[in-house]
Image (cartoon, rainbow, N blue to C red):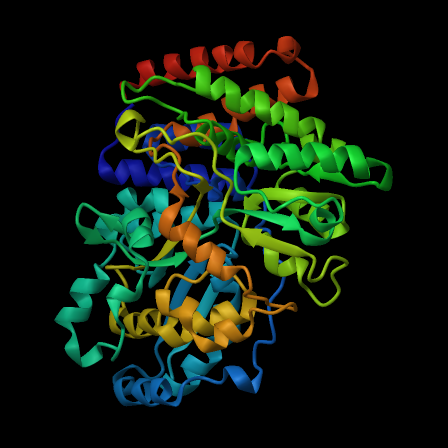
Amino acid sequence: MSFRDYDKKTFIADAARDFAARRISKRDFLKKMGLAGVGFSAFNLGLLGSTRPFRGTGPIGDAAYAQDASMTQWLKDVSGPFKGTKIRYTSEATPPTVVLDKLKGEFTEATGIEVEIEIVPLEQVLAKATQDVQGQLGSYDLYYLDQSWVATFSPDTIDPIAYYNDKPDLAMPGMDWDDFAKPLVDGLALYEGKWAGIPFDIPIFVTMYRKDILEKHKIAPPTTVDEFTAAVKMITEMEKGNGMYGTGLQAKSGHYSLNCDWTQMVWNEGGSIFTKDKKFSGNDEAGIRGLQLYQEWAKNAPPESTNSTWDGQWQMGASGQVALINSWDEFFPGWDGADSKVQGLWEAVRPIRGKPLRAVADAGFGEIPNYGHQGGSILGLSKYSKNIDAAWLFMQWACSKDIMVRCTLGGGFAPMRLSSFADERVKAKQVVGPGTTRHLPIVLETINNDIASEPDMPLWAGFSNNEIPVALGKLLTGQDYGGDAKKCMDDVAAQIDKAVAESGL
């Protein structure tokens, strides 16, 4: 099926609204998005009808986090023509958006510009943004854009670098574009040489462990897949009688979270999801090794792992059921919460490494094999905004060094700016407690060295939420394949290769 541009965007908007109203299933919605060429990146795909594992914020509003005086003065100086203006931004509940919503009053007080942040489920974000650009309505001034939407929406956003240079009278002093981590710019914001927006959010896999349990059994923090696996087996054997397992998984059948776990296992064994000839390769030698190892991990995880998404995996860590997890860095601050049963007991290291990675040139569809599975988003400025300059002031403020630091302090999540990681206020919170940032040095190392990205293709949204996790779920729960990883992956390969060939990709 082909679409003229306006028909395509109408099709996307209609499908997203139908899914939001539950008139069509998630499976049907993803098929429609695949036809229209719209994918969903790592992590964000699973948010359709779900939530983030974001567990509360730090003490927002504390005097220690008062807005920088020079920032306030600059806003007052440039905002005069825009007083009384109202701008709108729609997003799902990303950690920076949640915290930014708490801080927006400071911007309004300094500028007289009212800000409405509309936080809705991800499918509604897509529907609203698509409808807005399709009709060039300007209903929203800023867009939250999942990284895999960037190609679709890039023509509808203003390049922030170009606008900064073209509007020197509105250019925030010290914006420092080189301060955004280059791997995030390359992986999230750039499309055909243009910045489609500013990097805004980056969940990524790291390895986390219970230091008290490892010390008890004289186990060193694992740095390799083999060390992790050996530790998991030993802890299960020694602690199962106490209700603890070596690891916990996000292995719910038919859910994208299971796909996230599986892709990392394939990469760690030196494999990829596709090869450069665009064939599914999860059933090659490396892919089978990865899946067989995951089966071994499942034997050393709580039984509810096969019915758990990332939320259940977080709960396993919070309740003291597991000792090691290789998963999203966003889990960490919540485990250090004021009422946490495991406060101060978890530590983080860079994601475990397996066999040498398959080269990017040997993988397919823009896939980047590596050890740190990632997802991310950008903040985009709509070219249809009726209040572009007012929205531009807010966008610069929201992505400034000061606000990025304060958002990080409010939630402990990974910032997008290098200076945020180095800020003394952030370093001061590298202690046990609510909103901890003590895991962030590991997150920065991971961003700079280990970022992995799933294939960038229209059909991936469907494959990673249907064919792959459905088959994996049947294997892990014993419903099919008789425990045979090769048989499972050969079945998946047949389905996917057929669909790719039929699509003409």
